[in-house]
Amino acid sequence: MKRALTEASLILKPEAYSDGTLQSVKPLDGSGDFTFTRGSNLAATRVNKDGLIEKGRENLLLHSNQFDTTWTLASQMLTPVGGQSGYDGSSDAWKIQRSDASARFIRQDVTQSGVATFSLYAKAGNVDYITLLTNGGNLTKGIFELAADGSGTNTYLDSDNITSSIEYIGSGWYRVSITFNEPITDVRIYPSETPTAEGGVITDAFVYIQDAQLELGLVATDYIETGATTAKAGVLEDTPRLDYSGGATEPSLLLEPQRTNSVPLSEYIVGMSSLGGDTSALSWDSSILNPEGYNGAISYTLNNYVRKSDILTGLSLGDKISYSIFAKSDSNQILTFGGQFGGENANFNVNTGTLVSQGANCDSYDIIDCGNGWRRYVVNITYQDSIGNGFSYAYFEWNSNTESVYLWGWQVEQGATYPTSYIPTYGSSVTRGRDLTDKGANLSYTGDYTLFMEFELTKDAVYLLNSTTGTSYSIFLEASNTVLRFGQTGGDSAIVRFQNTFDWRAAIGTTIKMAFYKIGTNAKLFVNGTPYTPSENTLSTGNEVLDWRYLNYSNAADRQEQAYIKQLVEFETDLSDAECIKLTTL
Image (cartoon, rainbow, N blue to C red; front, side):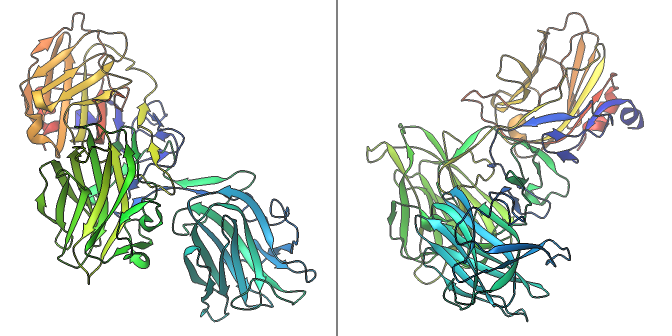
């Protein structure tokens, strides 16, 4: 394939990216890069090269390590002094010290609700304790001992907190955090003298602090520096998702339609209001490593069900719903999952990761291995409205009174026949925008050329590459009718159609290597090493441009697709049949 490699005008493999751009391997001047848009949210995730779910993250505090700026708005203020030796070898730490008995804390005003974590690096000064506190609906407070020898502990945790964490960093420094599910109006930091109270009587009490962070979620993640505005990291709203699902050693570009997770607290299930059934055995267990690679999951031990009735509303008989949840257990007891009535569920052995049985209206199921004993269990159903109330009981039931199952990442997608990648929620439902890429221009050449794409075919009826809807498509694939059709993306109206050739249905869930060449007004398709001739060809001039400028899907309600793109190549020449066969052979 030496000629093919040297004559390629565009080579795109999902390797290098930045926020908003997926970079091509060739050309190197940026003209082959794809811009990327998903909408203004942090709802997208991917599976990273370590096999862990990676999210978008945001530090919601301003001036997160400049404690004499937006932290100076409160009364009863301490005196912050910068330039102190930090945990990271820098001089970026601060000493916060009382000037008199009435000076108690530093504070930053911030309005936030839902599940969040407030964290800070801290070291003892002339007192050995520090208090983190949030003010709002209810006070949430954690007090930590900062023992110089690394033996420090969380000495007090308010009942309104979910959990806390203290990690020894070295040289007397700790990272401490509190996690809560409360609306807040400010966060506060106190030097403390006792293990149970935030105040004290020592008029010059001080501790050292550095790098404060407030973020959505149940854990303190890697610190993100902020200034006059908040700052983000991880999978941002326009980040191309280079996904390593299934233990892949090379990433694929994950492209998905817009979807909503209707579960308001996808990871902290026990914190949701109006849960039905017996929830007494639901608890947060901070010792379990979850699919994100952090500690924390829901533990459930009870032979009974938990359900929530107000996740989905406005349903009609026959509507489609996709339920999914991550689960782990060493027990061979049964997890029943999905909708509660009308046979809209399935039974799974979570220990072995196998299906036991499925209800009559469970259209399909899936079990996805996520590593470390975790699997994602999927139930796709047709809604029956069995009790005539117009809503669905989303539920799970664990059939053991003595052994636990661990649950994380509950997701319910309405109007869906399959699940998309995990959408985290922290207090309300969240919508992830569709993936949209644009190379910026059609092919700059006409005449003869060859297009090559390697991808994983995941679903039937796919507008593989198009800009808006089926009225302006590049490639349309419909597995149920074994059709593949090339069409316009610019002003050309020509269509090249291949029907009843390659059996796309048999290939769902597998890798496809596909090449298409145009020589004058003739065209040919190669799929996994086999050539096909068109069943319809309206090329009339030989100069028509049938390219793949776009990598995204239609917004049409009946076209909700998902694909993993592994590589794209454009050649400004027609490759020979032998070259195309070699190029596409698996």
